[in-house]
Amino acid sequence: MAIIVRTAAFSLALLLASQGISTSQLDSAPDSALQSHIKYVFVIYQENHSFDNYFGTYPHAENLGTALAHAHGFRQYDSIGKQWVTPFRITDPDISGPSQSRDVAIAKIHDGAMDNFVSEQERVSLAKNLDPADAQAAGLVTMAHYDCDTLPFLWKYARYFTLFDRFFQAMTAPSTPGNVEILAAQAGQTQWAHHPDQSSANPEGLGDPLVNDLDPAYGPYPPSSKAKAVQIPQRYATLPLTFAGTDNAKATHETSDVAEDLAAIARSGRTPLPWGWYQEGYVSPHEALPGYVAHHNAPQYFAYLRNNDVYWSHIHPLPQILAQLHNGTLPDRGVFYIKGGSRNGFGWKPANPDPMVQAEYRGDDDHPGPGDADHQVGEAFVATFVNAIARSKYWNDSAIVITWDDAGGFYDHVPPPHFERCADGNPCGDGQRLPLLLISPYAKNGAVIHDTGDTGSIVKFIETVFDLPALASLPDEKPYLPEGPRDADPALTNLAGAFDIARLNGSTAPLPAALAEIPDMIVGAFPPPMSCSSLGITPIVPGETSNAPPPGFQPRAEHGK
Image (tube, rainbow, N blue to C red; front, side, top):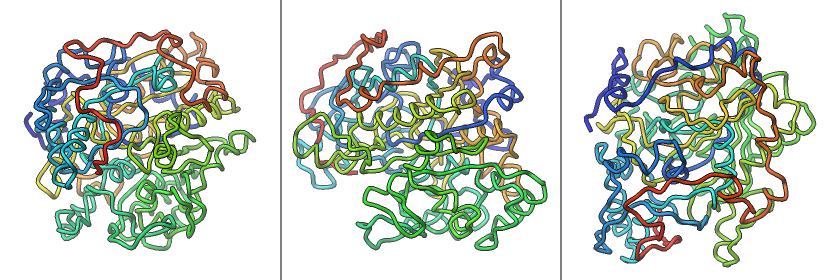
């Protein structure tokens, strides 16, 4: 696949068109309709799964049964087992996590051929001194996929609301850049352009654009955190800056590189927009519990967000939002981010009684691998918050976005668009395809949306709903475009295609909250007593493959990252 560097003319749109990827928004809801109906945006941001890994057999999507799938990595060679491997179904929710580091992800994508997932993972695993059997298992797990028999909650949301099947991670990299992108629609391209000496091409991996999971320069960190290199402070526009409106005048610390942005928004007279970042394990500015993952807390990377109370006062412990939803004490509008951790505070335990599984799969953020999450626990986390919103007084005015920060090293067959060269000479993004679900009373019912977007689309959606200025339009960012925020890029959807115009104009009734709810007794049961059959969904059969895992597959090989 040719690498195309984005220009001011947004050649990404041409690339997508050449692949048959739609960027049309002809049937999208108008901005005014969204603004009049949506007062609350909730973003539930999980970890590390590709679209094919979770929805590869979902009907009517760009799935593993299409010609595109069979032309891009559908058969991959297992050099250790001396066999050809095709995608296969698994039901075990406790698996090891493949490598998702930037260099490995680039090699797996293989210039858009999407055919190097098994062999590259085996190579990396052998280089880490794993024995051949574990290295083989590490490679094979990249081709595994789930369906509604294992993840019924997520498939139910797709069944009754909307699923995007052309949504990509905005940076070819692991988790941190994705978490930053969801606030900034970039991962530091502006800072690199402004300060070439801060390039992430340096040997320590510090600098911009962000391409790795170095912890932020500022705490808090979990108690088990060991002293190690941290990332340089980030200094470019984010949504919290535009949320603050006139309150930006209260920011007096660490404002270099965003001073003009702050002043412009403060002068605009905009009323501050309430928002909150709620994360598992966060306690206070100086305290975090075991299971808190500092490199998933995007605001913590930004000098001005972390060091000015006008912004940092919006960072909260996770349980707080459940209480606010239950008690009806949220503000009259706002944006609320919900993030899990590597330990869960709900007392959930995997179904597998194996002591190692019980000890090692205690998280709820859906991150695969020992020390992280069981995937049924991960979807229970999502369901807990969706239920809380659906049962609250806020449902009628809400949109819930559920997505994942990166593809986790798992196979996906859709070649990602390539644009913007990073400091290492490779394209910055897009990375692999991810699932994105949108739940709202005004959503299309059971629709698969083919509009193309990436993590920056969530920024565009929030800006659309609350009539905020694009980050790309701000004075400290504009001189460096097209490097930097992509929230003004017309090639990327603002998610408006997920909404039913008839529901917004009142000619069709809104979707009831009951469609989003899952009984608590089911949410807390592992495995849950729901299935494809009970949901009325028939997964597609990919063809040329077997549901049986190939010889050599084991779900929990110790292959590391």
